[in-house]
Image: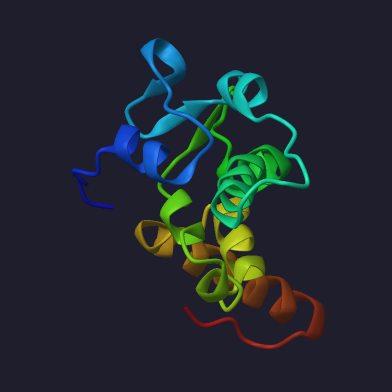
Length: 135
């Protein structure tokens, strides 16, 4: 993955229920604690934009443990947040595949790992079925 120059504070201002300050945001990661403190319950009289901001703030809390979380589970990655800017478009994404790729660590940079897994599967198959194994 390459370097990005996204200003995630501005992304949070535009898309979330507030703007993280201080240690609430570090680089491209937002503290889960900040989300928990700043996502408030919405009222029936909120406008559509307020409801969308609430939902965008709540989604990382819901799926932070599998899709957005870093290894410490104290931060969520903000690189996925812009994908929720338009909910009509976001509904067309293949979120299951994205979660699987992140969960298994099968990023494009890890194609060697994917190849090793496939080779291991082929090797086991050849052992069970008595066939030749080819790399």
